[in-house]
Image (cartoon, rainbow, N blue to C red; front, side, top):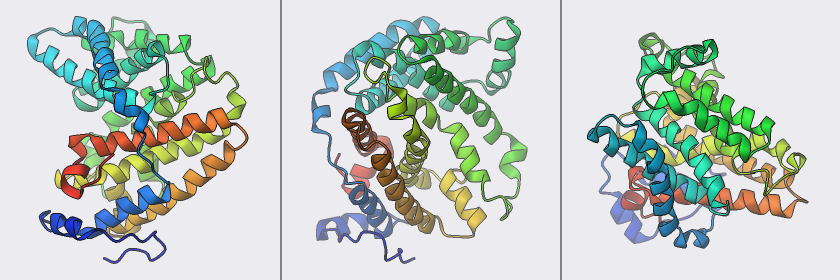
Length: 329
């Protein structure tokens, strides 16, 4: 497969070429794609994050003070702690300029994102919203406490924004159940259903929740300064995550992610779709900057989030971007 010539062209050093030959089933195309992404959004390593390791540990311990109370055995304690590590790391990287109390409130939201995505019992997820609305007995486990975590968002974000953050997580719950249903997994994707991959991706990624969290009320009280950019912020986050996650998911043999679904619907190779997604990211990146032009504090907050978001993906071992391709955040 040859990449579209309109992508920014960067030649990898010889050492990178040698390293990449060790990756069975992966050639230099993926390196070019990610490098084009980083260049296209003018990525610079957010050096302010270099000092977050101590605060990340403090945040993880604060998360565990609450979530450990929900564990029923030692095995759950270990699992809950691992999710606290994930939550504290992404929050510190994404929102490293936020006050600690704001980070902590959103850390529980992020913790539930990982809990729902990884281990929450699917029958409990399917019945959660109906049980909550009916005022019935709470579902067992951590989900019994989710409503208190969501309620706490309203102390730090404008009610309308908090409503949308809550709705985003509710969408994720439904999408998580939906995409794991046997009939959905087995159904043939129709070429005419071009919107389906983006629809499912938009529901299960909680991009709205993480996007609204960029602008807590105390730091950005004027919602009109950034609200028009938020649809693009959501799309930008989904595209970035899917490009930077593709290597890990491809190695794991995943066949139901956004890139693969879109490739099937459009009748293209996944890496060609990735190259197209890079161009889309760059366009959206530029559009966000134009929308926020004239509001320097808002724009600076957005740039710090974007760089932290990318750095987190480059830093984590799970994405294998440093080990397999030499990308350093």
